[in-house]
Length: 323
Image 1 (cartoon, rainbow, N blue to C red):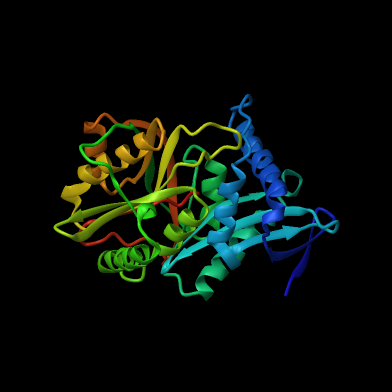
Image 2: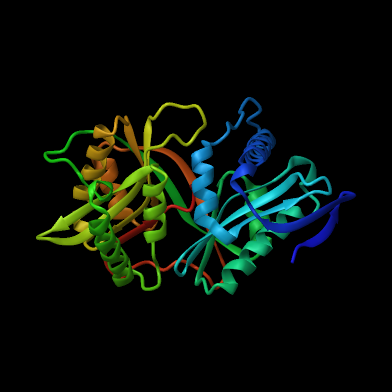
C-alpha cells in the first residue's frame, strides 16, 4: 500500500512501480539532479544528457517490481530508485530525487525502501556505486549503513576483428538459446552460488540492445560477456559497447574473451568497448592495460554492512552495477 509523507510542505506518495510511459519524467529528474550534483562539485559547465529511452526500458523491466518511484500531490514523479536483483546479488541504480525535494529526507526514504525490498527477497548482496570524488554522497550512503569498497575502473579498448567471428547467443535458434541460457546459469552457479544473470541476457536480446558473447573450450561453455551496443545517451551514435556482466571459469582465458568482445564490437559497427573492472581483479586489470586499454572513469563501490560482495574462489565474475 502506498504511504504518504510530507517533505517541504509537499505530500509525497509511494513507492509505486515505475511505468514505461513515465520515462520522460524519469529522464528529466535524472538529468536535473545529476547536473546539480556536478555543479555542487564545482563542474558548473556540465549538463548531464537524457538517457536513451530504450535503456530506461531495460532498467525498468530488469528491476520489475523493484522499479520504485514516488509522486507528489499532483501525480508528478518526485524520486525513483531502480532496484535490481540477479539471484542473491542486489544493487540499486539509477536513483535520483527531484532537485526541490533534495535535503529533506527523500533520498533516505528511497534508499531505505530499496534495502527493504532486497532484504525481503533474500538478497545476500546489497550494493550501489557512486562518484568517489563526491564526499556528500559517500557520507550519505555511509550514514545509511553502506561501507566503501574498492573502485570500479572503467577501461576502454578499441574494437578489432578477431581471427574468427565471436560466438553470439543472438545468432542461435530459440531452442539453442534456451540450452545456452541454462549453461550460462550453471556456469555462474558454479562460481558464485545463488547468482543468476539469465534475465538480463534474455531482456537484452528481446529489446535488441546488444548480445551475449560466448566462449567455448572443446565444446563446453567456459565464459560469457553480456554487452550492450545501443547508445547510452539519447540521440547519440553508436560508439561504445558496454560490458554489463562477464563470467569466466578460468581467468587465464580472460584475453580470449576480451578479444571476442572487441570482435563483436567491430562487426557491429562500434568503435570501442568499455569494460568496468572491480579493483580486486588486479590481474584482469593488468591484462586490459597490457592490451592497450585506457582508464576513462572510476566509481566507488559500496555495500550494505553484512551484505558485501563475494569474490569467487576461482574464475572471474564482473558485475556492472550501472545500466
